[in-house]
Length: 373
Image 1 (spheres, rainbow, N blue to C red):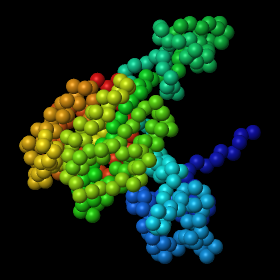
Image 2: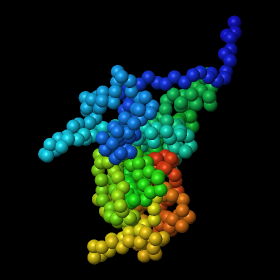
Image 3: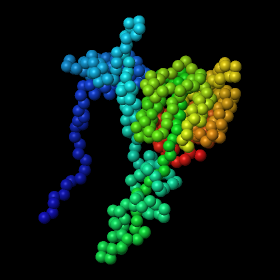
Image 4: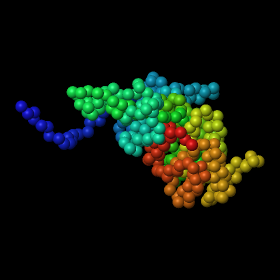
């Protein structure tokens, strides 16, 4: 008796929003607001109250004040009292981790599966990273890598069940990849242009840094990530301080940033070292030997750009590639980045803010699967 065949096709129905508690709904919004306000709790709550007035986010049973109380009880915020008696509210390390995880979910969680993330390596064989794929056995492969089930299946297909035999040509092993440990320095431009013209460029850059740091801390704990920011000067910041990152009234001292990044990487023992640089503007500042600054925001100054090309070449001699993520499309700036990249033999991406995270994550994954030369 034949079973009735089901009709294949699409079923359309009304969207049902996943269940969230009142706290969870507000918490998702709050994490975005606290990132945009660079950790300013009072400003974020003011924005949340305004959104509540417009979109009716709360109910009489659960108000913004109830939400704040829950943030305290769950350990996301803590009240601070200064020596002068002034009060305030600080984020806890639990909240900082939640912000990094939120950024990781937003950026890394949305990356497409498929060939865009399927980065191959030239090496196969023994490794601690299984790919989930199978390949033919090759002389020298470890015996424990042989897939018994797949090999027996091949033997039955190739020789039949009646006269069973197993030969070397039937053997299949689970493929692996060599993945080297990686030391990465992420450079973030904090010059004033990162918030000019009504476009917030620093928040997406900050989110990428939080997401990348959380990925490395949780998935690749043997890798290292250092974050530095550069304006008139360059200085390192701790991962826990990323939510509080802000721009300043700075010019763009690219040379100082690269020099600091190289100093950090010189002290790392990992064979693979790289620099990621997120910037939207032209280099416009240099440190002079007498301690003063040479600044020229008008166009591309040959004196400044020549120093940039020189420091890029120094990084190349140290075996440190620089990948530049340029979040602007000005043709004359692209010409500078092209020459800068050629001096280092690195890579450059001219990207918008929307795909910045995906590009950085894919490049990071690709580079850590091979030895950078």
